Length: 252
Length: 115
Image (cartoon, rainbow over all chains, first blue to last red; front, side, top):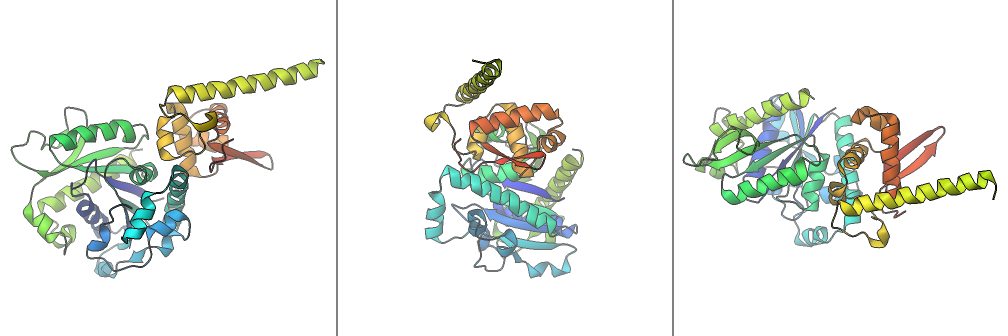
């Protein structure tokens, strides 16, 4: 049985999508068959990166119009790597985003069921790791993804607004749903008292603290650092998280 | 009224009281006021408002899809009778439906049945 990881953030702009992409490739480089899906229905972003174009969307899976295998594409650039990668996107057309924004609770309940079915379909066809790049904050689509996950990686920034909301999301969502989780402090500055790894004062497990590095943002659109530069501090942090997730889930 | 009829009436009243208690429990754990006293659908936000024991059962049922009380008990490491009780509470709340297949009773998350 495979594992499902939701990459989440309490607020936007934390570097969640970059982290999700690098996490996916880190698993691929370790020989895993990975499926990376963009579940940010209101602000899709994964299609902007270096992946192939698609005309099939996760929206159709959530609507129950097709199975997940019909809505994902294999990334052929991973042929030289030990594992494989498939990607799935949300429809970025504004009409679709608007339509998704208007969905009611009944639709969201069915969407969660369809996500659970998608997991089963993927794992039964050889996927080892499903990574869901969620929308930020606490809306239906992001909480649905968290509910479907075996582990939640929260990517956050070490400023007060991110920190305060992070604790609320952990207390109000992750813990009630009994999801194991770990936090990535991204874009840290050396003089920030919150830029630490370990367990912080609130008891929150911080898996890694990543310095604020301009080259991560600049190179992130065209290359995957965990592949092109595995010894980069950002890449090392990602591999640390892979180890922490494996340790956590294998101990259950 | 015969003894059998009296017993049936007592069972009916007990079920009615149990259902009302479930609803009081739900309203006590949430500020959301359900329409007609019943939540029509178990979405993830409603899931978060459930008491801990029912939330664990409902979350496990989401993961299993369709399951018997025994399947749930294996996943949650509780007694089968306890899970059966929790599942039936969720049925009375309208969140879960149950179907009989042969001698087994399968539970699954409802789709807005409101009953």
